[in-house]
Image 1 (cartoon, one colour):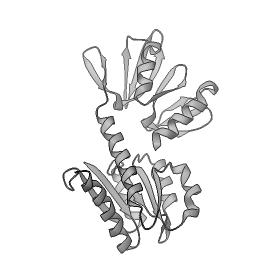
Image 2: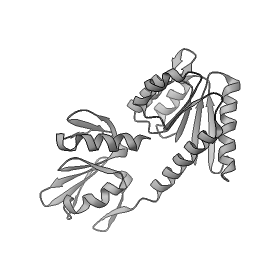
Image 3: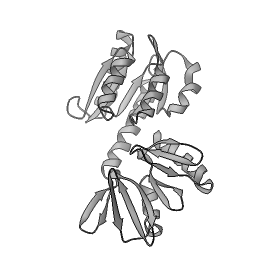
Image 4: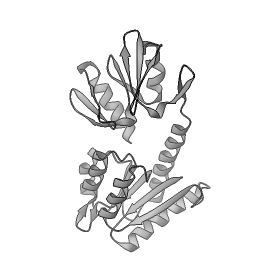
Length: 237
């Protein structure tokens, strides 16, 4: 189920945004209640509380920039810092906020009234990306199949590879040098010659370290920093 949250303080505009999203998705043959669902919030706080309880509650957020008493960009920044990985589309009256929104890696920035063609392109791209992720292969270690989404990072361990998931470290007989080419096609990126990181588990990148949603810190070497940052930013779109 593809779940969308609309956050807009004006009830009429919120309903218009919801209707536009429904029209786009229904036009692609997707049925509400079967393929997708949409919830509407008229303030930031209820949405933040919902996502604090379940960071994966929504796959897409349609956010107003100027919410009454709140700022949509600050809301999005809060969500990124709290490991909410939903895509973000801003819908606003204020084009001047576009630059402020960049650190939150929005999928799109739309002015009111919504340009349905641009909304359609953004929704279709996001939908397709998520469908592709569901088809991802597994890593077989002995008789065990480990989904690539479960793997936070791979680490060189002598002539073997240590596979790190949330709470587990699994020894794999194949060296990292033989795994990295295929894994880099599946959303992993080298942050260091000994570390291959799943970009979907990264929550923060600093100059010489990155932080994962497991709470672990991984080194980032000077050699790999620029490529890693480029891949990381692209993964958030």
